[in-house]
Every structure is written in C-alpha cells, then in structure tokens.
Amino acid sequence: MKKTRLKPLSHGPVLLAWAHSWRVWGVSSCLAVTLAAGLASPSLAADPTEAATDTPAAAAKKPAASSATAKNIADQVRAAVDSGAPTSKRLTLVINGKEKKFITLPAKEQVTPAEAPAKKADSGHDAAPAQAAPPKRAAVAVNPQASRQYIRAKAAALTGHEAPVAPGEALQEGEVHWSYTGEHGPQAWGQLKPDFNVCALGKRQSPINIEEADTLQGPAEPLQFNYQPSNGSVVNNGHTIQVDLYGDNALTVRGSSYKLVQFHFHHPAEEQVNYRGFAMVAHLVHKNAEGQLAVVSVLLEPGVANALINKVWTYMPLDTGDRVRLPAGLIDMNELLPKDQRYYQFMGSLTTPPCTEGVLWLVLKQPATVSREQLKLFSQLFPNNARPVQPVNGRTVRDAQ
Image (cartoon, rainbow, N blue to C red):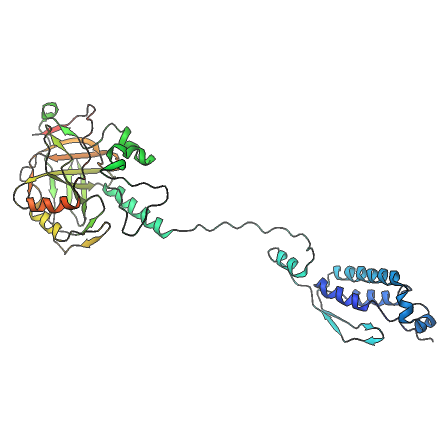
C-alpha cells in the first residue's frame, strides 16, 4: 500500500488567523471529518509525485488556486461550526510540513439577547439577529426635596395654611410663591397657580367686613370649648407665627366636634366689624372627622399683655422654616379666649392660597387684649400679613345673641 502524503498547506496561516478572528463558539465532531476531507481532496493534494516535487516557487505560481482553497476551507469550517455541537474539540494542523500542537476550540457559549451586542462588538463580525429583550419599566426617580415639599403641602392643606419654603430650599424652576405685597400680593394670587384660581373666582371668600345691620340676629347655640393644657411647637412659616398643637382640644358646634389643629396670627386683623379694623387677630383652626374646617377668630386690640401670647413669643423662631418645641403642657387656649363668647357666624374660605371655600367662620364679638410690646415684636417680623376684605356677595351672616 502506498502512503499518501498530504500537500503542505501554504495557506495554513490564513486558516489559523481566520479561525482566531472568527471567535468560534462551538465545534462538532464533524469539523475534524470535514477538515480531513478537505485536506485529502484533489483541490488540496495531487498525486504523490506532485506532492513530493512541489516547491515554494511552484506554489507561488498558483496564487489563485491557493486563494480558492482557503475560501473553500473557510466555508467548510463555518459549516462545521454552524452544526452547533456543545462539546469542545481539538485539532492538529500540519503547516509547511511541520506538525503544530493541538488547538482547543471551546464549547459554544450561551449568549443571552442582552449580551449579543457586546459579543458582536468583541468579534468584529455581525452576530445573528436575536429577539429583543422585553423593555424594562423605568424606575421612578425620587426627589427628596420634592417629597418634603409634598408632605408639607399636604399638612398645610389639612390645617388651613399653605406650606412655607424651608431655609436653604430654593423654589423649583417656574414655581412662584405668594406674598402679601408686591407683584405676588393678594391681587395676583388667583393668577399665580391654577390651584389658586379660587382666590380670584370664588364667591365666598374671607375675610369680610361684618355689618351688624345686615346680619341675621337671634338666638344661636353656644360655642362649647373643651381646651386642656397641651404640648406643641411653634414655627415661623414665612407668612406668620403658627403653633401646632398635640392634644385633645376640641370645639363643639352645629352638632359636630372639631379638633384644634393649630393657631396663628395676622397683623393687622383681617376681619372688620362695621368697617372697624383691629390691631391683630388670632385664628384658631379646627378640623372635624369629615375634614371640614372651623376657624374661631379672636380679635386683639392694645391693652394688657396676653398670657398665652407671651408664652408663644418667648419661643418664637426667627428664621423661616425654623421650629421650636414648646415645654409640655405650656399651651392653655383658655388664656386667649374672652369671657364673652358670643360670635358672628358665616361660611367663607381660607384667607391664604389656595383660598379653599366651605370653611365655617366663628368671629368672637368681644376682643381680647395684647400689649403694645407684644404687638411691636410681631410687627417687626410681619409688618403686614393680612388679606384685604372680600365681597360678601349676599352671604348670610348670623349675629349670635
């Protein structure tokens, strides 16, 4: 039997380089068979005599044949790779008469659709199209500053005043802040935000001037105050000094119990009686289980010092957004109430944006007193934090006798 010697592969480096650049993922057992068949084919080796006498010079004269052979081998190797066997295989190549060491081809990698673009970039070749992964729902970014503003806004809506801007917190771009003077004053509140449009369009706005001649006079239920010494904190919210209370202080009127949530001050007083103004007013904001608000208005005029106001002023914070906790049991609202608790009653609104209507107003007829020193201290911080009186628009005002 004659021994057939394979023709040395002058194009062997081409095959090796091509295999390296292709980054084969898996090779089946048919690769060895296909490659061996290719090497033994007439296109790769002639008869023994030709194989023995072939020289590099002769090989150089046949570049076209070598190019075609390399292309043929490349096609065969690609076909073998595409057969998709999961196991690893080793090849032995003989290049220019020298046997090369084993070359191990790794098993086919499992490539997920998400990894396909990266694999394509690594290989430098087009990857097979893969089904796109289902789009993931984008995570919602949480802005801590916006969250704090939302919490304050919700709390303010429950207690009757808009939330302040805390120290160091800038307004969001495009956001405006209301005030008592200037271009953002009461005349412009209704145009500052869509939520404030009731300030301009509402028909039951507060405060009002109460004309006794036009009131509905007669008997009315007495106000039942149930106030106990309570804990609380005082805050400068940028618009007024406000005391938030913690306790079971309640007002019973119209068959409903309202819990006292907070009280705050305006200078000068917002309400008028027979077109008479007052130096100051305290608004006691109550809320019942149905979310309805009832505000008791205690008018204040110069006189002897007020015991409750003296306690609040002692802990008065100076910076906007600053809050001071009050000693336990310090606040006793009975110290603010006048002895005569007859009142005027009407339906109105909040006197600050968003000017929400449906608020029950109870304006005590008899003013309490505040010393000039107490009045001066507050007016230095808030020279004018009163909304002008609003049209009555035919509302009924009860004069409780």
